[in-house]
Amino acid sequence: MRIVLVGPPGAGKGTQAAFLAQNLSIPHISTGDLFRANISQQTELGKLAKSYMDKGELVPDEVTIAMAKDRMEQPDAENGFLLDGFPRNVSQAEALDDMLKAESMKLDAVLDLEVPEDEVVKRIAGRRICRNDSAHVFHVTYKPARQDGVCDVCGGELYQRDDDSEETVRKRLEVYHTQTEPIIDYYKAQGLVVTISALGKVEDVTARAMEALAREDA
Image 1 (cartoon, rainbow, N blue to C red):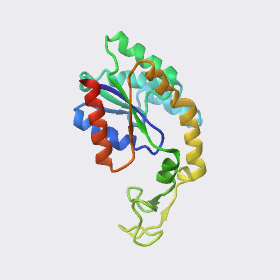
Image 2 (image 1 turned 30 degrees about the horizontal axis):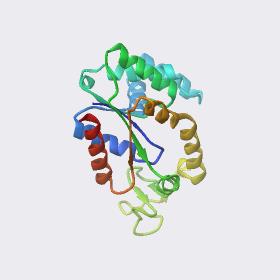
Image 3 (image 1 turned 45 degrees about the horizontal axis):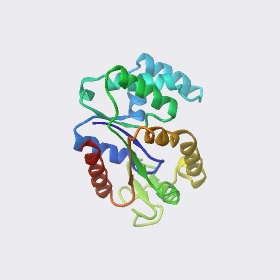
């Protein structure tokens, strides 16, 4: 299957993408991973992307599209893939359609993870990270530390990252609504969108998604 995963920040896309890709035996292609891999390997695309990032500028669509195209042409993606973070806007969605059409391929589904805005804010703004080890992550509601502000694992100080503040989260949501959400309507016009609730336990959301995709594939 060839799937695009969409949803607001805090919807759990990365977590669900990993489980779904494993269950469907297809590669999980994340924009973030693509950028990191190209930059660390110092590919021409990576160098180009870094030149924009170093100036604090957005990486142009054509660079992101070229990275995604290169990854989708790898042998492990021959029988399908799950795209996470790409396409991010309608022009990227149109470019993806053109890419697939050129290879006589098409998308099978666009999985839309739906989460109420207040829940997104609660999920992200409630995160607390250990200053000693960023892998130690807690949440004031869903995974509170035994002692407020202190990491259960190493005793380090827990803090809220600047980009996890409520103000920043709401700004990120505005960007999502303006730039990315329109691709849902774009794909709805093609009859590809499958919307599921991303509320509840991780495994329940995965099961919900697998059932929805199975219906699409039937």
